[in-house]
Length: 82
Image 1 (cartoon, helix red, strand yellow):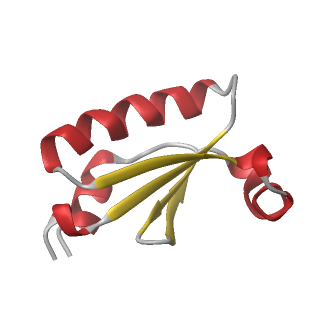
Image 2 (cartoon, rainbow, N blue to C red):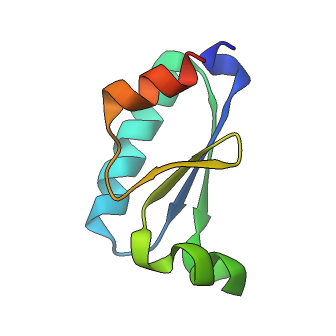
């Protein structure tokens, strides 16, 4: 599957410095690799808060959790190449 076939979601929170760093990297990579990208505020829904609140930012690839706190670029690129 090519990167363009993937959807990446960043679960984020306002005022989170790790979230800001993840957002910058994922936006840059989305321009380079062309994957679908969206952000979701963890505080927007109780279900998200219950599952992810203590681990933001959380990166989902195609709806499955890929990682949290920091984006490891080589690992992220490898996951998108699958």
